[in-house]
Length: 172
Image (tube, rainbow, N blue to C red):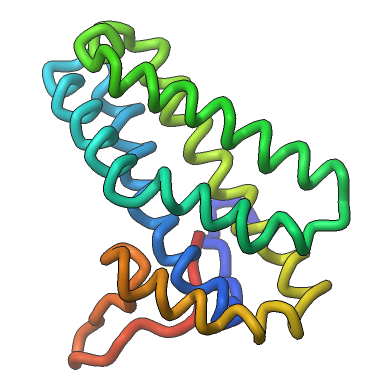
C-alpha cells in the first residue's frame, strides 16, 4: 500500500557499519535538495564537503574494496562504479568551488537526488544481493567491519531510548 513505511532490512553484521553510514548520506542528500536556491545553500554545500571528507569518500572506497570483488553481476558492478564516479566528480566540484555550487540550485538538487537514489539502491538491491550470494565471504569480513566502525563515527551503533544500541536493521 502506498505511503506505508518500508520495513527494516536485515543486514549481515559485516554490512551494518556501511549501512549505518548511509543515514548521514541521506541527511546530506535531503539537506542539499532542500537548500538549493535558498539562503542556507552555502551551509548545505559546506556540510556536504565536511561529510564527504569525514566519511562518504572513504565509505565509497571501502564498498569498492570489500564488496565489489563479491559482485558477480556486470550490471551491478557498472552501476556501483558509475554512480560512485559521478558522485565523486560532483563532490570534487563542491570542494573546488563551493560558492559556485551553492549558487547553482540545479546542481545541488542533482547531487542530492543522485546521492539519495544511490544509497536507496545500495540498501534495497546491492547489499541484498551481496549478503544473499556471499554470506561466507561477509563472515570473513567482520573484522574489517569492526575497523570501519571504530574509525568512522557514522558507522557506530546509535543509542536509542533506554540506552540500548540500535539493532542490525536499517530502514533505508
